[in-house]
Length: 117
Image (cartoon, rainbow, N blue to C red; front, side, top):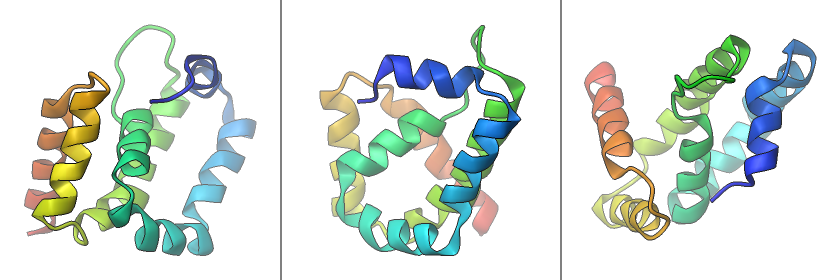
């Protein structure tokens, strides 16, 4: 789903790299594009969640945890409101096909739904 070497670089990156990474995804143009495109691209949506999901394992910097949590809330959570059952099923299928934890995705979706109610 994601390149392991690239993930390690992000997970251990300092504020200078993560600042640029964060700014790119929080930019209004990028957010608007993702809001339009991700509901129709289950594989890409699943990849962003896989990348930004909470990680508590050794070697993941606190800076990455904060950045990823912010991107989940500010970039991915708004996409959820645009997903119908068909599109949610598509994301679930991607996770199952890739051997990823579907429970984590489902729990996050429910937390966002409860938060926004």
